[in-house]
Length: 432
Image 1 (cartoon, rainbow, N blue to C red):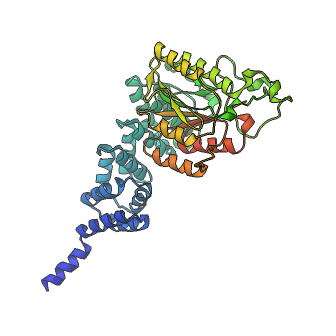
Image 2 (cartoon, one colour):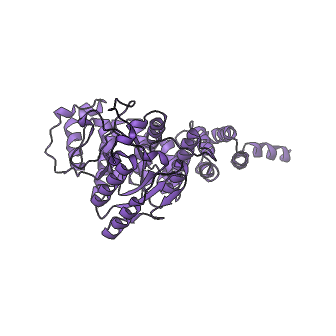
Image 3 (cartoon, rainbow, N blue to C red):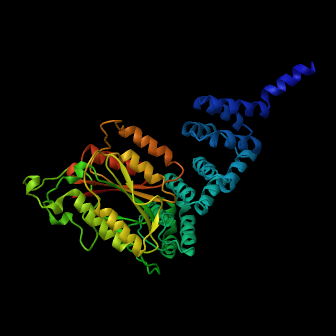
């Protein structure tokens, strides 16, 4: 009789459930993982949730990670949820903190919302960026004062121009309709328009009048793409198609003035161009020569606290350095010599180049310039598979990939570049 009772208890005990979780994760079956965690979520304890973290969230498998988050959908307030909120702030592995913030952001309870807000102050920029992304998806105006305080926190640490600070300004702009810089300006805006903003209304930018103390600093730019991060890797296409020459645009309005590069962000298809063959055009209209000229200008203007690396690619990949370098005079000379060696040849191994960029330690932004789809004759590149691969390796880093293309090659190439930027939270810029 005792043996029978013991057997029944073992069938429903947390110990057996945890064993089932390990087996489910080992099987690699996301659906099974989701089902097991759904069963564990009912009346879950801190121990239960710690096992979910240990076996599922640390599985290093995107499908298993997502299945675990889905399985937690019906977790009710209690010890298990409180434990997850604590671990979203304290767990030593940043990928766990990132995943938990994403999960807690999907919930509506106050405890979870507070845990997401704490993520804005995480020691790892990547986790803070994940918290910002989560809050943007929630579109909760109640987050505005917390976002302002987080921006003030960055300013107090002399990180006014870091990527986290800029993304905080971006989400504040999305939620309010304003375009401000300093935390003090945003705070004044919030206090003056709180009632309207809490009603989920955006403000009319033309009616925003502030006497703020903040001064908006004009960032360095590359072909009109503002570089708000101070740790950037530039990935530059030097394949054979970059020897093509493009006619000047019909309208001089397409050019930016005042040292801001040749291009601005525009959408759409190729525009009408002046006639004439490529041979009749000057060498200055060769794509690669235009890129070299703009790169040199940008490198000369980089502030000394800027860290960067240059990567060129055709069929092969060449790195200026294996790590980020500081924009000091000797390193700027080194960069310009690297740029001057560019010569158009070979295919377009975008996949290898981007992998190399992600392997540069400390990178917080990637800028990819290319005039064509990823292409290799041998070992062909699947564009859709490449996008999925980049989603996977970037899922805990949240590195924005800004892309720059050419109006003359608009079509499938620009579609790929735009999708790459959209998925990573970057921006697409088109060169006339």
